[in-house]
View 1 (cartoon, rainbow, N blue to C red):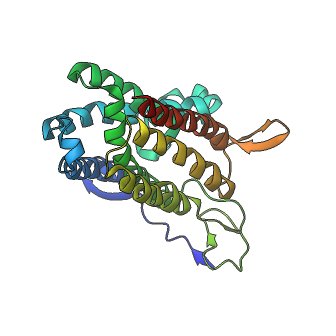
View 2: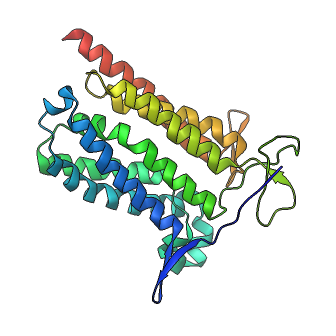
Length: 265
């Protein structure tokens, strides 16, 4: 059985200002967006659409606002409304963790809609461009959750080689942030990146990511202690699984639409 290293959430101090590892993981996520985005620019089918470095830099500003505002509002509305209603100032304490991916996802969709209108780009092309750049940023966020010892997993057998004793708990659990980092993040990056290296029907890349994330998150939620659970069609599912179901359905529908539309051309 492993023991959580329980590192100090504060990476270093700059005078009176504490720099948290969780915040640094977001900087890592934004930096990899730029690096991978510039790699995408060298792909012939992307270059043919007229993408430039300036597009990436400008788009990142909108994306950062979408991630932070959407992620925090999603955490408040989807997972902790009673708590934050009683502690409204805690809504702004983002350095403590607590960002909803599903909220951030919706925030980015809206931000990219606004940016696409400003840049006069096809919205579907924007979604296809950024989809392969999202998973590793998500992985960095889950690493931040692990450092903050957030999102402990469900009870695990002590015989499981990677079962982990979590800070504040007296029983071994699944290290669910690591599962989600590797499956929802790294594995999805490999699949979507390879898929996006060749020309695909418009909206296919973005749809594939939505579908795969919904499926992988639905799976990894089985190992994470749920924020709360709901009953759906006689089945008990977690809040994360409930929020992932629309992504799965939308991903399938949009992927079929993308290929069907191309077949008619």
